[in-house]
Image (cartoon, rainbow, N blue to C red; front, side, top):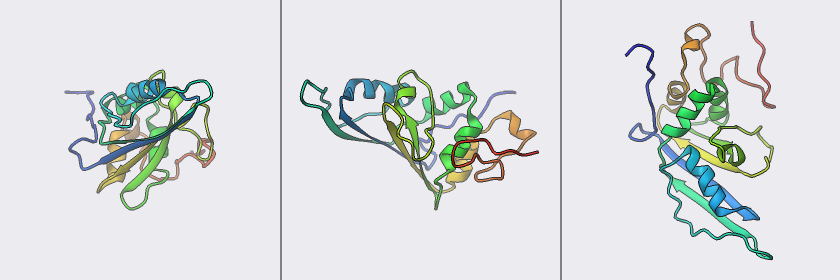
Length: 171
């Protein structure tokens, strides 16, 4: 079909996906779960969830294995942030493994936002770890868009965003 794109999910593609987050203090476990499900609806968290109460906050570490990335990757396409995603997802790429973070606050409304490395955004983050042979090529395929026919992009190319999140200038 003309104009259709390859739909990747990470499932059965040799990519291992792990999501983790710490729910602390006044964080509502239910709201964090809802935020997670906006981007990863099939994610199952086995950690018992407790809501904070007066005088007793939460302190939970969540670890989710092998969720489908279909909804997350679809959101990247819908939001048209594919080059940003290419850069953010591959920033820490080494030996077929990478980690990146997503804002939980943005996820709560079904949006994807990649925090600036080193920042601690309000509402916390989901930490995503991807592993698999050929991961760089998988990330390039997962974030591909037709504009790359005119302006090719690859992992860690000269157009990669700066460490502070600013776009690199190029001619």
